[in-house]
Length: 136
Image (cartoon, rainbow, N blue to C red):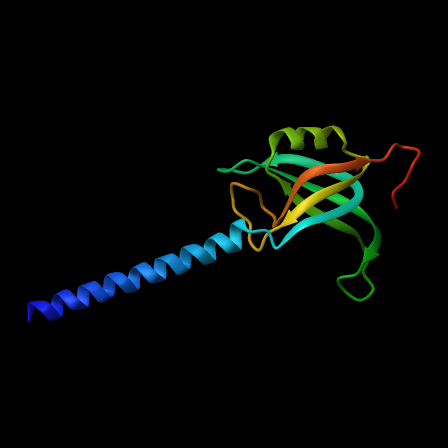
């Protein structure tokens, strides 16, 4: 009788361990492995702000050329909303607000509250266009 009880506990522990390892692996892939690891976007940097209640993150918006339509008859500009997890880079971007920039970013499957509100994490500035030039 005791052997069957011990066997059941052992099976339960092994099953729990397998589920935990699989769950941890899926969590890691979803939140920490970039889906798109080398991407760029260009446009006019609209804003960068430091916001959040518990986790303060840097969030920004890039206005791209062209228009998109969510509904028939409606038009709006193309916007790229992103997060920045590097404070030094965020401060550099704050100084470039209103300028045309090309940004390098990584895309993740999911957002983490301490990394930012979006799945897009800007990790570098590729170039900044002078006022007389235009990248559009």
